[in-house]
Image: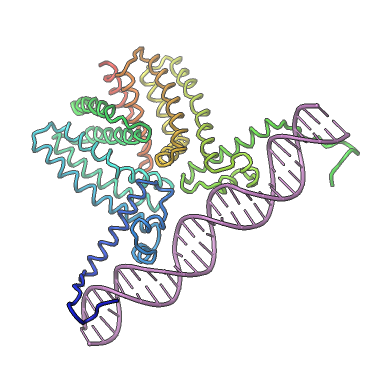
Length: 207
Length: 207
DNA sequence: TCAGAAACAATCAGGTTTGACGGTTTATAG
DNA sequence: CTATAAACCGTCAAACCTGATTGTTTCTGA
C-alpha cells in the first residue's frame, strides 16, 4: 500500500536524527517522571514507562540500556526543567515591586507544591538506599541549592553563615510542609503557615 | 533419636500458643522495619523479610497472608513502639528542670533522627500512591500528632490555633531536616539549626 | 548514490516476587 | 488421653521485570 514514485509524491517528513533522538528521549524521560508522580518509585518499571510512551521495548533499551540509566537521566531532565523557570518567575515578581521575602517564599512554595516535586521526593527516598542515584541527586540538589542561595543573597543584601542557615531552614520547612500534603490537602492551612513563616524569616534575617 | 520416656526426661519448653504467636509476629514485623530502613521500600520483598527472620515461607504467609497485611501491621507495630517512649523521655527531661522548649525540641529531634524514622518516611512516600497504606498511616500520624499536641499544650501552658500551628511548623521543619540527612551527615550543622529553631519557636509562642 | 550508523521494532530467556497449597508438629480444650 | 485448632514447614505455579538479541527502517556523510 505504499506510494512509491508514481503520482503526487508523499510529502515525507524529513526529521533530522538529532531531533528524533531528542524527542524520543524526551518522551521516555517525561513518561518516567509521570510514572514516578502517579504510581511512585516502587511501581515504576521499565515496562510501565515504555507503555506510557507507546514506543517499543527495543527503542527504549536503545536509548537507555538499563533502568538505572533511565532514572539518572530523568534526574538531569528534572534539573534542567526546574532550575530555569524559578529565576525567571522570581524576577517577574520582583519587577512588580513585591516584597523580596514574600516573593522568595511564594516562589519556593510554588516549586515545592508542584506535582513534579513528588518525583523529586520519590527519587530522594530511593536514593537513600541506592548509591548510584544518590550521587546524581546530590549534584542536582547542590546546584539547585547554589542557585537559590545566590538569588537569596541578592534579594536580601546579606550573606554568610547565618543567612545561608536562614535559607536552609526555609527549605527544610517547605520540604516537610510539602510532604504533609500526602495526608492533608488543606491549601488554606498551608497558606496560613506560609504567612507566619514570612514573618519568622524576616526576624531570622534581622538577627 | 528421640528420647521418650526412659532416662532423664528431655525438659521440653512448653510455650503457650499465644506467646509463640506474639513472638513470631514480632520477628516478622521487626524484620520488615529493618528491611525498610536498610534497603528501602522498593526492595523490601516478602522473601527478603522471610530470610531475615529465618522462618519458613509457610509460617510467614500463615501470619500475614499478603504483603499488604505485613506492611499494615508493621505500621501499627511502629506506632506502638514509638509513641510510648516519647512521653516518658520528655517527662524525664522536664523533671531535671530543663527548659520546656529546649526539652521539646530536643526530644522531637531524637525521634526524627532515629533510624526508625527512615522506615516511617519509606512508608509515607509509598502511602502517597497506595490508598490502603495511606489509611493506616493517617491513623498513625493523627494519633501521634494528638499526643504531641497534648504534651505541647501542657508544656507551654497555651493552646489554640496559633499554638497548634507553632507545633506543626516545628514538626514540618524537623521532617525536612531529617530528610536532609540523606545527603549530608553533618550533625553539628543540624545542632546549630536546631538551636536557632528554639529561639524562633519561643518567638512564635510569644505572639 | 551508497555504505554505515543510528533509530526503531519485536521476541525471548533468566531471574524474582507473590501467594497458593498440602503436609507436619505443637498446644489446648474436653 | 484424644480430637481439634493453630503454628509451622517446604515446594510450586503464575505473573512480572529486566536486559539481551536479532531484524527492520530511516538518516547522514562520503
